[in-house]
Length: 142
Image (cartoon, rainbow, N blue to C red):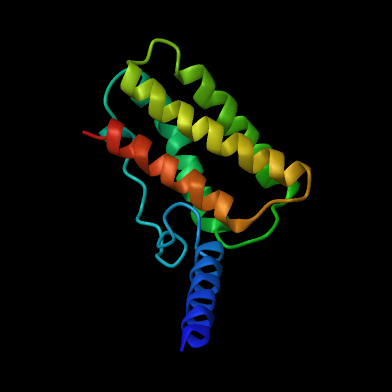
C-alpha cells in the first residue's frame, strides 16, 4: 500500500513538473487570436503618444504579419530597428506612465532583435512585443 502511494506521488509530481515546463510565456492566447486592427494615429493622445503613434501602429501591423514565424527578412529586421529607435526618441518628455509602457515596448523589441541576431529567436518573442505594443495602445489611445 505504501509503495503504491509513493509511486502515485512521484508520478503526480513528475506530471505537474512536466506541465509547468511546457506552459507558454506571457499571454498564451495572443498567438491563437488574430490581432485586432491598430487604432488610427489620430486617436493617440497629444504629446509623446502622438509622436510614437506611427511607430506603435507599425510595430503592431508588422507583428501581425510575422507572428508564428521563426525568422525575419533583412528588411523586417531593419524595420524593427528603425521603429525601436523612433520609440526611444519619442520617450523624451513623456509622462512616467507613457514612458514606462514605451520602455517596455522598446525592451521587447530589443530582446526580439537580439535573439534574431544570435539565431535563437522564437515566435513567442513577437507575442511579447505585441503584448507590450497593446499596453502602449491602452495607455495612449483616448
